[in-house]
Length: 453
Image (cartoon, rainbow, N blue to C red; front, side):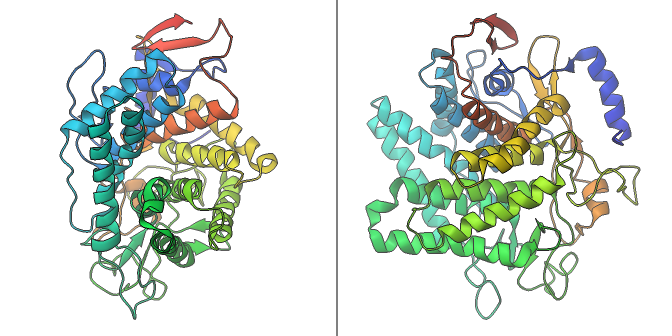
């Protein structure tokens, strides 16, 4: 039996009254079910966010990496099912968000770039709908964010190791975190894949070299070949006051292998490889990184199909300042599931080796983390609300279990919602589950009402 936090146990009692575990259904579009359930009601830490839906014309979603992550996933669902009338509001709801939000990019804050990933699907959608002016605006906004990263973002400077690497944030001096590879370089790569050829061959090659540099640096300094896992972060200057509380004074590495941190990195690798030119000389190296990460994670998969908050331990690891044990964590498990399926689809990962891992993982997501409520909607539980490294956050095992900001979230936090949607979409592609399948038993879940298609 897994050891859960006391309040998780209490939450289970609540769920037995207010909702119930949703058994795995092979005939259900979980991507649709969760979007229809939560597009207008999800959390960004404690804050409630929403996008426009047929039941609510307003939006409260802010320019932030969490709503951006969810919005990107919803747009992916729209592209996958855009021939279906029920997907229309996925596009219009996120378009409403994009058209009414002000981009808020802090100085050298790599997290702030993630929301800009929505502009690529919006650009293609606007073109297909004859919205020429809007399409150009989306392209302009995506380009602005790419250029801000490439030309203005603070980088590690020579003679420090990792010269050219993007700082995670301005206040995190000479630090690179696994999270940042998903926020910045993955956006950079998607821009290059969509628009890079317009700037010419030399600029495109230089930009891809710059993207690869980020992965080369973070992999070199965070990979543990014995554990086959990546540490959460690395500092090129571990003795500075921004790093000396958590960084190893010699290597600059942080102390632990945090699930969602590795999830951001694994997802970034497959997302970048989706757009990376086949003939780029570093492509084989990027594929090698992806396979090393996949191999390490496959070895750490729990019997349930999921992965733990702290990847190198099971539930026998317990916090020293709280009565909390290591636990299966939903956002990391969703990110890994997404990356395994996508890596297989792109022929980056071996199907025979990793499809059983992905299938086991997806079933585990449903069995462990999806809760069906009395009105027919579903929600996602057991995600780590936040985690980081600073002068007050040491990054040891006790911090990731007992820290003030690492609360377990049980009400569909956006950092699990987005990856769960993307994992579901990849699962549906893998199994060729789609709304065009002739199956009268297939369910369509719309705002809590079950309708047989």
